[in-house]
Length: 292
Image: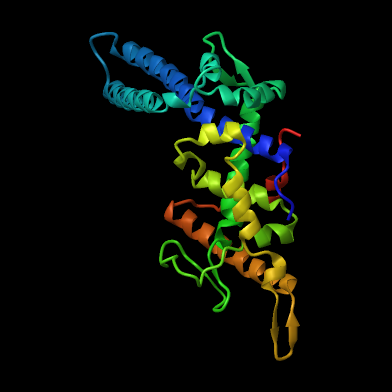
């Protein structure tokens, strides 16, 4: 595998920064929607309260509307509290010139690609295109979980897959085959590792992640993981009847893994009480790039 290109580092950095900013922005959108709902419910309650006499049906409707209003106000309070907790996800243009000065070139890059803009309050905000890019990123994360997480723990000797709900996923018997699977499918292994780390919020565990991002060193661990994991050629072995190629091994693993992933998804849907299985996200969306 070749090392990460500058273009890939820039794209992954832009996606990570967009994900960070959206943690506040999505709450902001939810707040506006809840405020609209509360206005409608308050108007409805006020209308139902008019007059001295109400039928049983009107009393029941009034009681229902009051309960809906109470729940909506509680939801708004929760969102406002969460917004306060995620206020650090906002980036002010003044901060970009001081504490987060190193991010200026990446922010300018995102502006040039039309995914970010600076609002009148001097905070960076995702544009409509930025929201589209973020939604595509969410789809990639969903596709990653559906098609790749199952290969994170594979016992090659026993030919079994680790189950996070029942197995102790420790020790040397488990092999991570996500990179090998990506190679075989023609999907950029770096993208799969990026999605895995983003899904697990590994990047944000580093308190200095923004500084490392500005220095261009944040993705060194990601690069190391992709290079050191097992690759397709590493899976080949010899037996009494001859050699078994890595390609044969990975094809068999993918066939078994796909069946297991489908069973796990079906089990999750049953637990959630869904009547019909939703269409699984297409893994090919993982091949999409957004900035080049």
